[in-house]
Length: 387
Length: 224
Image 1 (cartoon, rainbow over the protein chains, first blue to last red):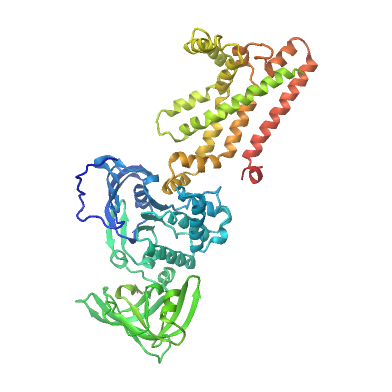
Image 2 (tube, rainbow over the protein chains, first blue to last red):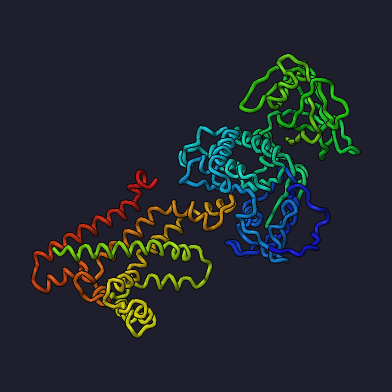
């Protein structure tokens, strides 16, 4: 593993934090004939979605990054450290890479309890510390009651949490998730996503999230790398990479808590945005304009807008100097606590938003039913769903 | 009933199955995980004692242990006597004779462990050997017990190799199966029947353990 001292990385900027950079090629034979994986991308801290049909090479790519299979050549860096470099014949073995990998079939150890599974990756700690850390992790994923159960005695969604907890507790430098939500129902999906986001808030590492589901891509709403037949065909935000989903059921499935019928009233091509008028539920109540990203549309086009409850901010005073384009006065009409989060309903002139916040935020702002607040929504948090 | 021969046989079978347990695990590990393309040759060699007549195996073991072979000479220089016709020689012959009965169940148990578990273990920071000890071995308990029991039972019942390598020295190399042969030769049918029946019952009991285990009959209590 000795690398020349004066070695200068061929990449333009020095890697900061735990950015992941991958540039690999791999060819192999499969049932359809020969397959060529040839990719080059960077993933910053936060979610990067790897999207593609089955057989596009997503799992092979994750296997290469995790060190479970060797590329033919190329280079893999995490946080500026080489994991694989064909030029210098360098190949850190999987178990020394500290890359978290949640496999598609979870692969929980059947002979161990949930707690033993979670403690498995904490080999280097002493027993007391190991127990404390794994119990803490089980508690934060709300599965501490499953501690002494074996995987066979645990339901699908809970197994998923155990698998995530087992990987996250090791504090990996990057996280690979291979279709982690594929088999789950919608509420479980959005809860697990919320947990993951929360974790990622504390541990700023790149998360490669593999999916072949458009709904999940939109639900996550972040950087997407579209993979087809082993090549990157597009990279960017979901609406740039994918066409908008056409029917509302898709949006419902994808976990948007807020979905509104709207009409395009003005296009601002210079700003890359447009103004949409949201139709309030009941006739006679007011209207609401939202600034949304620009898509191929014209004034009068009917569409739907989806906003994640977790993407909305609340302010108790009229905010100033914010980049967010949508700042709407409203009143809290309901407030309820769900597990670790607070869900609030805010009425803005007849249009109701569901907003998710933390307990701490609720207390700091002194939120209560009846309080006047301002709802803040970024332009790019408004996802457009064409009918 | 010749108890001397009985306990000698039990001692032999215990030593052989214990040594095979210790050596068979690394051999089976290698057979399961080695990427070497020619490993099928080793697999075939390990399986040879299943199909070879015990006399063939016994003959070559005898030659290998004799004072003309390097191994025989080395042993002689060390101990002052040859390996042939000793209990030690019998152990060596039996080790080869029962090798596949330990290695094959081990290897098939290791191979049956879901490879996804090995991948998960590696990504959780465990080396291949650590993974083997903490994941593969615990999940192969039934195969380990099967291999141990089969090699024990198989050694109990061996005849040809013992006769070739060990001869028929009372208290040293006369095992229970040879004792039965002797009794029949001397027309002592009743005592031959007692000994044979004992061997039959023990063998049936041991095989019941093996099959019960692999049916998952006992999976619930002792092993999980």
